[in-house]
Amino acid sequence: MAGNPPRQCVQCGERLVGRTDKRFCSDACRNLYHYHANNAPINYVRNVINILKRNRRILSELNDGPEGTKKVHRDKLVQNGYSFLYHTHTYRTRAGNTYVFCFEHGYLELGENWFTLVRRDEYLERAGDGRSKDTN
Image (cartoon, rainbow, N blue to C red; front, side, top):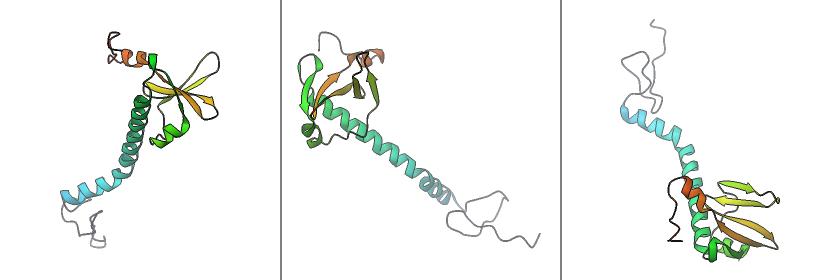
């Protein structure tokens, strides 16, 4: 068995001593290796969630109309930092209208860069977070 090359730490390359299935020379190297291996997907998910939260906040702040609806221009959404690439779901009505939602807030594109903002409180009610009818 003298012909086996010396084993090295996967992270830093230091010579390994001990168990034959050992991959890291220390807990610090093991933690650093797994941090780098998992960091990119975690950062991507974190960034997407932050964009979705920002989109929801923008729709919520702009939708101060009666009954949870308001007409706004695309420029107003873009000016506030809304990203049209990210949303949580779409809803298509029987009439063929497609609403785009970020959680319970959404919009319907009317054409010529105008949008109707809407709020679906029943999404919150289904989750047990609904607002009481007296506070709307």
